[in-house]
Image 1 (cartoon, rainbow, N blue to C red):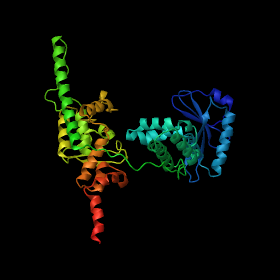
Image 2: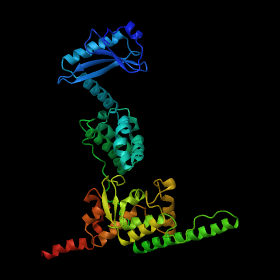
Image 3: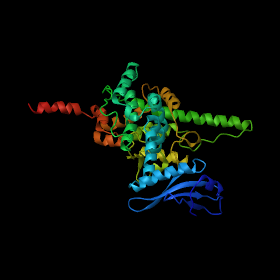
Image 4: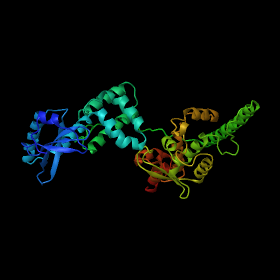
Length: 415
């Protein structure tokens, strides 16, 4: 149907069983599409410079009058005549509007960084809390405004308040990583924190490992804890049965009473980080090749690495698998979710073993220290630990057997 689109005409149009169009007789390409539902929409049909026929939505009849729609059609028709692809122009404008909205620190975190990167690593919520706690006051700022001078001032204030340099650097690195992703996505043309220096950190880093007598006490404490829990369960079940109540699951025949012993032993024999152990899944363990895979999602460095398992670690995992689920997390918490902490159980174990100043993470130091003391090359230890650089591993260099004595001996050989 071809008619001039006027107020009177639009009011007289009735919906049909199928959609139909009324083409305006005055403006080439201007039309009104009527849907069976009664909805009516103005469009402008045009051709792109390469001859492709397209149409662009102008608006609905309940949003604008025919005169307003006609003015818009004339404008679009003029642009098309001058070689502009008006549909593409509209798409670009819409994308630019979305990009502009996501240029603020808070919007980019929620709409881009979390969905694209952090949630795939399983660290999204922790990073959101860190960034919100430290930089929430900047969330309404355009990311380009967050320059190195502003953050350097923040570093100074935090340091003066007594916050450790390592903590401050970790917070800034979380922000730096998100801004790097914004630069990678083209939202930022230049990294706003380029040139910002990290705070100096003491190089005398902690290396705590267990002495032979401490190892013995720790293993004895693990065994004693297991025995105590077994006896406690047996006694409690007898009490329940006497009162006609259902007993708790019997621990007889099970290698472990709970997750603590296998986690501690695995940490001592693999050097895995706490988060890597708690995030470990059965699908990442290959008993045939005697290896486990630390995925990028759970690794601190966000890089996948493969860890060879010794016979102790293999036996631990085999026995634990016999009494637990064979899929999902190796050491699940309540409701099958990832465990958040082992602080209470670990503190009780150390008290039982009479060991002080030894954190669960120190099992990793113990693993590395014992390897170096047995002459294992630092680069091999670096790969086993998953360090990003050899610098991190060099903290164990002083433990290499006789390395300082050998170095000094070289001087005598030259005399």
